[in-house]
Length: 269
Ligand SMILES: O=C(O)CCC(=O)CC(=O)O
Image 1 (cartoon, rainbow, N blue to C red):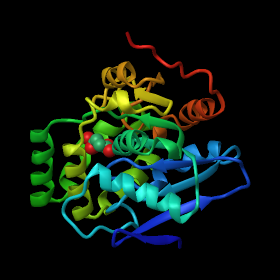
Image 2: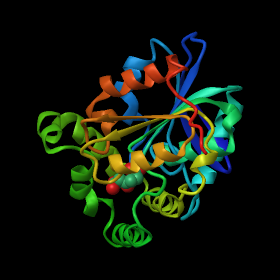
Image 3: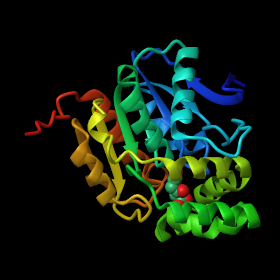
């Protein structure tokens, strides 16, 4: 299995190199792993090489501390790209993966052709909310927030009609290392790109879910108003829009990677 050591942690990744000119990197959300992209990748891999990895402390990637930052998680991506000798790629991250995408676009614009940030915000939640969640799982485990998580991630209709998919995602959630979950909660808690977004010069597609109450379409609008070259689309989905609507999600990603002229440079007065 492909793993590399990055900053003393094992980073588990999958690289589907299928002879295309370009590569896209997929970055998972908090409490999931790279399998959250399974369906989307079916639509993307005929067109782009696909690099997926489990974020530090998720899936099969290890973590050795109780705290991590979005900057460190972003550096992991750069280290992985360097390891694979990948120059300039597309990046797609959802929620926490979208925070990593914002950090990468601000700090390493030369490494990214376009960035897709889905179901994310410049700042997700509140410090008190994240501290309460950390306390809850420290005391009662991930199982204690399973039902609430399912409700925040999927619409009631999707939970009812796609039970096997929902169960598989929730099983991964329950298998997430507690230390990894807590450390990454702290990373999300401490991330705030509200002031820095005008420095994100990479063309950026923002995808929101109209039914997402964690990272709302208003959060998407906020980012779209500040990132200089951006487009904002909304899918009729909850927080894990890529799992609920993989075909629509992939269509928007592919459209973004193929159409340069659509990301107008905003002129500020
Ligand atoms: O999904 C993420 O990556 C961060 C936001 C979050 O934790 C969603 C949730 O479970 O409430």
